[in-house]
Amino acid sequence: MTGARHRRPRPRGRWFAAVAFVSLLGLVAGTSGTLSGWTGATVTNATGTAAVGRLAVTHTYGAGSCAGGPRTAAVTCTGSLAPVAGAPASTNDTIANDSDRALTQSLTAASCAPVRLLNTQQAADPMLPRQAVAFQQPDPWGTTSAATFSGAGYATDIVGTNGSGLLGLLSNNYSLGVWFNAADAQGGGLLSLSGSLSNGAGVANPALWLDTAGKVRVAVSSTLGTSQLASASSYSSGWHHAVVTVSKAVLGVTMTVTLYVDGGSVASTTVLALLTGTSGYWHLGWSDFTGLTAPTSSSFHGRLTGAFVNQSSALSAGTVSSLFAAGSATSYRTTVAGLSGTASVWMLGDDGLTTYAGTLPGAMADPCGQVNVTLTFAAPAATFGPMTLNALALPASNPRTVAAPAAGQSQTLAVSTTRGASYSTEITGLRLLVPLTFGYGTSPATSWTMTMQWGGDPAAVFVA
Image (cartoon, rainbow, N blue to C red; front, side, top):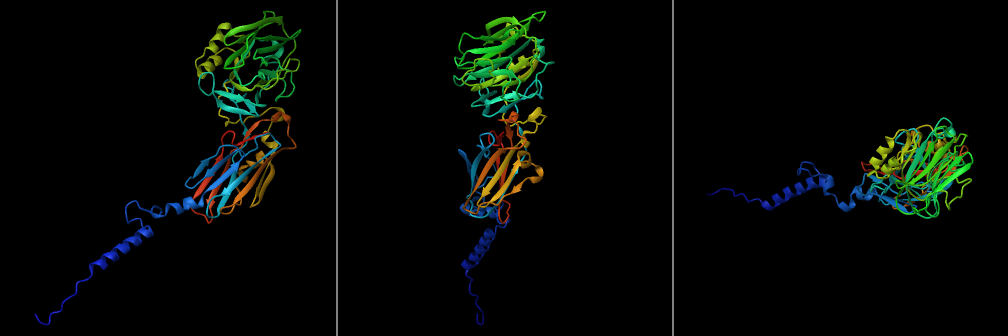
């Protein structure tokens, strides 16, 4: 055919290359419709993502550290940002910005209140632990309902026993007991009634303690002075159960004091009853030894659990034996609680994080208002305080914005405590729980945020 025009075939390779190029642009742009479930974040370089490079912080303090990032939204930190010792004291924290860019930083103090040990018979009379106390420790039943007392650690209740109560004029029969497991041979108070709200002089009556030979001893005041009983055997290792019963005669002239250890009677005496009243507060892990032969330590070192006070019954030998034979912490508590006259049961299985919000007696009122704290940041600098722990946790002041260290740099934080003008020695050693949280974000702001929280025991505890 003449005059016909022939078309040259188009190069198919270029057409396919164009399609592939357009598809690649779609992937790079991160369009959601390219492939089902694909996003822009999916195709970024894992080692250079915002999560890795922009939120990485490490706090180093005391004997520990806490690191956050690169992909964590919330971090629970252990160890303590607060001084371990009671006021006045101080500790330091180094805050490292391990990111590759600027950060924002804030600090929140959630609340302040004293840690408590629950009284399952009357919630208004807990024990308040002081100084070195560890929680949820191994008990005689293979669970964790005990507390460990070390150093100068002890606990006191907050409702005083007076003339109309347990030992007022000693007009009632009564009993008291506790499980103990000694950690050393220094002895120390197990359970006693003393006039002091803390560990000041108060003449304990009655007093139950362990001497340096591992013998269990009890002292009870009588008309002719203080009567003492002691076990013949040593109980310096392992778990043991000690119970004291006091039974008044019909006319109230004499009283019989009996000491039981591990379910059996080990000593007993009958003396003239005391004709004057006795009042005070119950102490666990400590006793005042005024007028007594004191062991090496007034404070008991070891584990305690299952403390109780019965204000109207001298428990029978059979009842004491059944308490010793209880097969679990729950069984023991239930049995003690069901006895007529049981006023208090402190099992001591608390987590160390539950606080008491009620009214405290006398000079103990408002302990968080009696301790001052100062937070001093450096590089970059910022200072908060001195102020009371109440002011630190004031909702209107939280969270506090703190300039963060630059990328790759470190900042220091000094936390110091002092005793306020109203400080009373009655609060010395109280464990004041103040949960602390550091918040972090990127600068300029993105959706990436992270919190680092010190809210456990002893992480958030200030010692008064």
